[in-house]
Length: 424
Image (cartoon, rainbow, N blue to C red; front, side, top):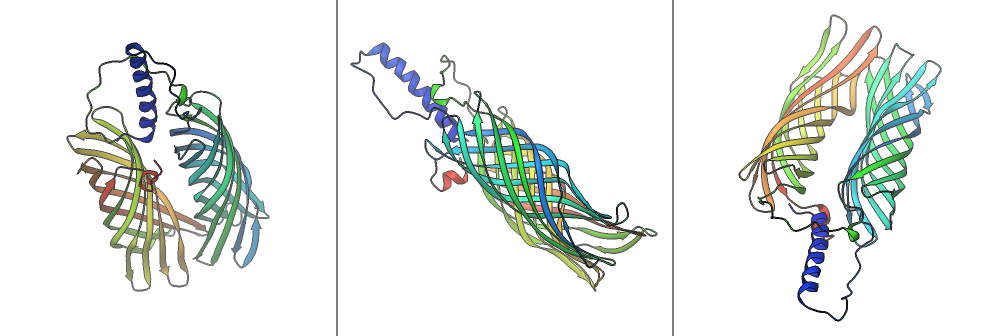
């Protein structure tokens, strides 16, 4: 698909070429003045790295004790995103990042560690030459671990909430920019009972980071120099560009809760059920036949089952995945894999092993997408996902394992949200 960046650069090239032709054929009295293009363009996709420092508060209740942890430490990570000019100065876009570090604290024999976290956010900015000042907000998540006491009892939790913040970015070269950013994240609370441990956590974080981005577009769009005319390449119906869509499907799998003694299986349940959701992504056409893309989706439904006092109910799930595919006619055949999450309520032993929390894992799969028209496509996709969570409570280790299969039918519209609401 031809995206906004191609219109911008193509328009500049067309204007330059037709201007040269007019000058060669017809004398003119003077230049024709038009509205100036922006001196700097932030349009396009980008990838980058970042590093920084984080600190926060985790209000926890463990074994009936109220504890206020204040984890802090350094981290580094990766990000990718897309920006679009609404006007000469206003820019909107999205960004997804993941960070790794050692953010921790100790209270007596209790420790709190946050080693992996990330966000998926919208960015709204004001561009002034090579400077971009922006506000940002969206989804945030973190993998946390509580130890009680050190090395004996360990409770793992994935916490999901929201993040807001602001930053400033400076383009110091044609495709390179550096930035400084502050984020505040409220990662909500979790509740659970594992054996004799009744636990709840409520986590907030502050993050300051420096970042470096590489953009797959010309920064100086207004000053772009057109190449010499060459023979036009063969054009085929393409898959490149942003897309959004809806899907529905069916999921089934297995939930197993085990204790380390024996080992002993506390519960084995096979939930199943339907779901629906939304997805969005971006494709790059590497050649006539090969396509690489990134996709994120979120689904809601009820994949569940109850066996006596035992129960499992998955009411929300999502993925962030890479797609690599082969174009055959109007079809795209692809493999996919990446990060996955679910939210599940589980009861293994009534009143003793109860969880209401998020689980983080991985997913792989494959699919086929058929172009119905220039804008619309339909897809059939299969994914296998795996999740686990471990609580170490001497003399036992309690472990939850999910394996989930999903089949979904989807409908995609090849355009960005910005195009749908008229921000072209």
